Amino acid sequence: MFAGIDNYFILENMFGKADVFAGAELNMLNIFWKDDIVRLEIKTFQKVLNRPKRWDIRKESCDNSFIYITLQGISSFESNMVSINNGLLKIISGGIKADNNKNQIELFFEQGWFFKCVYMVGRIQNTSNIQREEPERKVF
Image 1 (cartoon, rainbow, N blue to C red):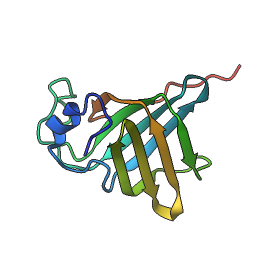
Image 2 (image 1 turned 120 degrees about the vertical axis):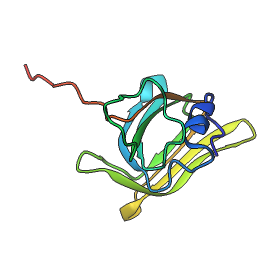
Image 3 (image 1 turned 90 degrees about the vertical axis):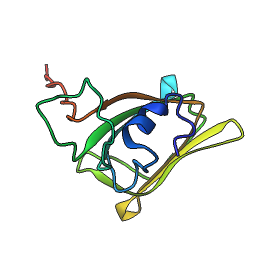
């Protein structure tokens, strides 16, 4: 399920063997071509079995949670998405798989959008029960 992610045990401890991508939404996809890095923010609706202690205790229910993933060493990237600024993309299928020292993520969304990426190292950077707020952008 989480093959291709170095610290997969974080998700396994939180969700068990549940597919965190099923019915989830892609909130953010950043591509840094110069550094061969892709960053994802995924909002999942899977039930959290073991809640991390550092999560906000004021928010008792865990109806959804956010997973921040970084993929490094991108060797192949394919997508038909232009921008996700107009709304969230609901994931209808896909996931992460590892074959012969090759890690790959494939996510397919409503309206025919897709994202495929071959990478060397994947890491869970953070999990949260509260969505990160974008810093206020100032125009000079």
